[in-house]
Image (cartoon, rainbow, N blue to C red; front, side):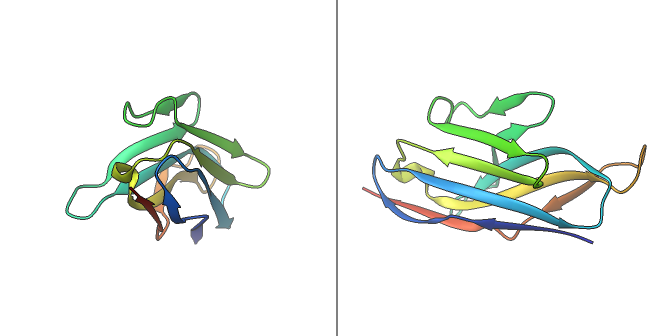
Length: 119
């Protein structure tokens, strides 16, 4: 079983910064990709950023957010700067995990961490 635990969320003022962390634990062979998603109240979950063979960002966060990954610690980070009220959401960590060499990818999500940006 694999667990993803997010941390670092909270309340911040417009223009402020936060750093989210997500640590993967459990028994597995490797992690292909780690991503961040977010879901605002009344809206669908949306992609934010990915760290895999390449680094990808949604247009809404490009230039403000930075994703990084520590493959030794199986941890992914999301540095969020110049935060806006529209960034308010629950932020979820995702990992594409392989249980053995050549095993198919299994998708895991964390339980999320709340980020609230006040105007």
